[in-house]
Image 1: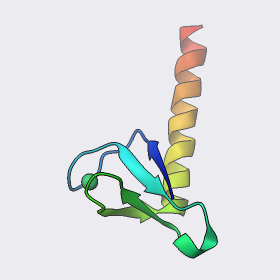
Image 2: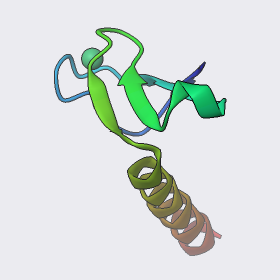
Image 3: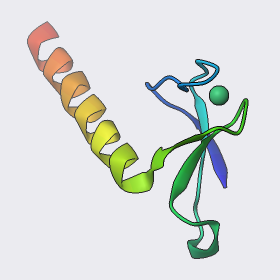
Length: 64
Ligand SMILES: [Zn+2]
């Protein structure tokens, strides 16, 4: 697992740090690094990260 800070809130404790699976045997669940609550499937997280990346890109373009 690797711990990352994301632009997402844990639904249980509100933390922004999550543990992501990096190996097949770790499954595809994202877990809160603070309270270990199950957060979402990696597929959902990827969509969230893509959305975050797009909004950041849009912000950068509009700021330029
Ligand atoms: Zn949590």
